[in-house]
Image 1: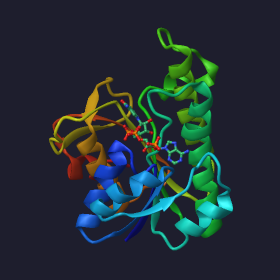
Image 2: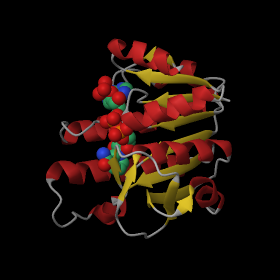
Image 3: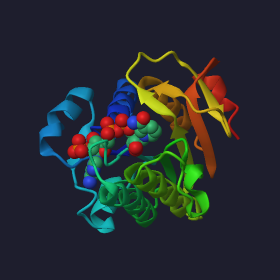
Image 4: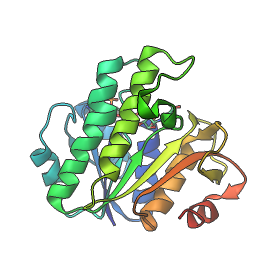
Length: 221
Ligand SMILES: NC(=O)c1ccc[n+]([C@@H]2O[C@H](COP(=O)([O-])OP(=O)(O)OC[C@H]3O[C@@H](n4cnc5c(N)ncnc54)[C@H](OP(=O)(O)O)[C@@H]3O)[C@@H](O)[C@H]2O)c1
């Protein structure tokens, strides 16, 4: 397969890139910082330097053309304020969707976040500060934009709190599940399995659990 990962130097993204390249898939990784190219090359991922807050859909379409799927694993990150939650977590995800549509790439995996339903209908979640609320709103808006596009087959993965613990290969995937944590290794494993069997319009929460990844993904409608 040929896969394009946006936010390819991210911690989940690099794990996914290594899994894909290790089994022989072609992986293009979009990064904004040219200094990240060497790390990607070391992972077996072909780096493409593009700042997704600066470029046009046309430019991104040239990168994704011919891909079997695109994966959005970028994020403005912990040190960022509310404006960048909108420009990255929503805006860049939507830009990638525009580019995928333009290039005729149908399969799109979005890494979103558990808890986004807490801002559905414009609500402000109890205990969430302004930046976290903006983050959840940006993720939810990205989901809504993508899921409304008939030209795309979208799978939304909403992980709980990400950890760097070693993956267990076992997860819980579903709807309305209790908040929890999940190792980034296991998020990458779930994304890999979903790339092999993409859904169309699925939205799943993901935390650590007892079910082997392949079984959990197979049970996802
Ligand atoms: N942390 C959590 O507990 C948690 C929970 C649920 C979901 N999530 C979501 O899960 C996803 C993956 O998380 P992670 O920890 O792997 O993220 P991460 O390590 O923070 O990686 C995010 C990547 O996005 C890149 N990026 C930011 N702005 C960009 C731009 N304008 N153009 C291109 N790339 C850009 C960053 O590049 P730079 O290094 O250049 O900034 C970084 O490499 C994120 O969407 C995150 O919001 C996180």
